Image (cartoon, rainbow, N blue to C red; front, side, top):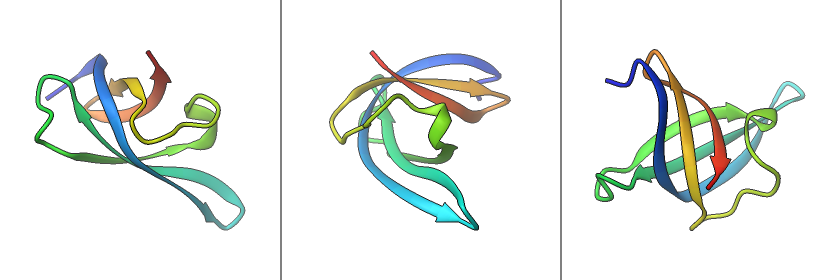
Length: 73
């Protein structure tokens, strides 16, 4: 469990969704230390860097084991 902090990962898939006018990204990624374990999260568009793409090297921010943001490495 990651209480808070960041982990390096690779972005595998990203899908822009709209829920009642609010935009989110559904992301699939894997931490670099466990590349075989895909993880999923939903984050607000404002919590991601511009134009995220599959294959990007990212840093995933966590708080209480919940993804709060992604940044390009």
